[in-house]
Image 1 (cartoon, rainbow, N blue to C red):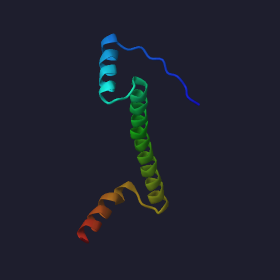
Image 2 (cartoon, one colour):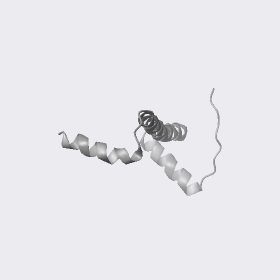
Image 3 (cartoon, one colour):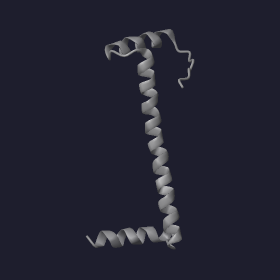
Length: 81
């Protein structure tokens, strides 16, 4: 179900936004929804990456690795190339 958001913006900003939206053949509503979707997707990716790093960290801890081991392991892997 759709929901409404009421925002107040400067009159000049609103007019410029309306003009730019029309150039893309989109309504102000469509353009704002598009921008909101894009914003949420970008920020959800950040959350996903944080969760991934957290899972990797937890997995390494369970295997007994410590922070001090990371640099040594990176050197070992790079030297194998």
